[in-house]
Length: 377
Image (tube, rainbow, N blue to C red):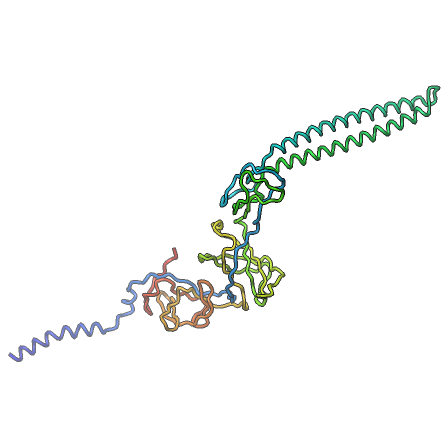
């Protein structure tokens, strides 16, 4: 009986020991190759230009903003727009009463007709005097010729020429007055001088306005610049044409360029106003006058650095690490990072230009694991 039990125990232990020995046996390389590759997205380590910058709060300013004034004194007949409305260049903003202006225009038109009639009469008198002088000169050498008659004819011609010149001047004067009446009549309609948005109305129907009074305030909200007050010691790297980055409040990035540095320094802050021209996005209609924007001003030397995409970095409290793809498998490598370059980081040690690193799917990888590179969607 003891022998039987001993044989039974040995028979039960042998298969377990065999299974354990098989589990500890190394897996051949051919078997590893058959392991399913993990799908990942990758990015190449590259060389980038690094410029150290400092953020400064700036603001949007309108290039075209101000009151639209009347050019004549008259009663307001109607206001065509309200605050917040968008208008196109040439649109009617307000109408002034034009009854008196039309009557004055008609009066000037009648004066023009009268002056033209006087000029025509003066022209006829001049022609008659020229004819009389010519006939008198034809009598020279005959018994009918009289010197005093010739002299009288010459003086009459001179007087008629002067009358015609006076009539021409009068005609030009009244025509100019008629043109001024036409301008005043046209000015009774207040037009938008440029595309924009009505910020405020300053009059109501029935008001009497004097020449120069504001009717509305209009702003072109699609032609904006950025203005920032930059300390004088930070202006070294700024000059017209320099390209820098700006950031809207919603995180949207803008490419802006220095247009001008205003040559006036604030004695309290020792800063100068810098104007930037901006390539505004399609939805720039939502950008407002005095809206805040952050500009990144260069404060250091420009240098070339090795950079890696931020998504490649694994940060868990230890030294940053990345997975480098080599011959279809990944290798974990510690790296030393430096300055930020937007969506990338400077790498001071651990990577070389041209190496390929995993940027998506790297959280679940293990060293030596095979990977399948996926194309970015």
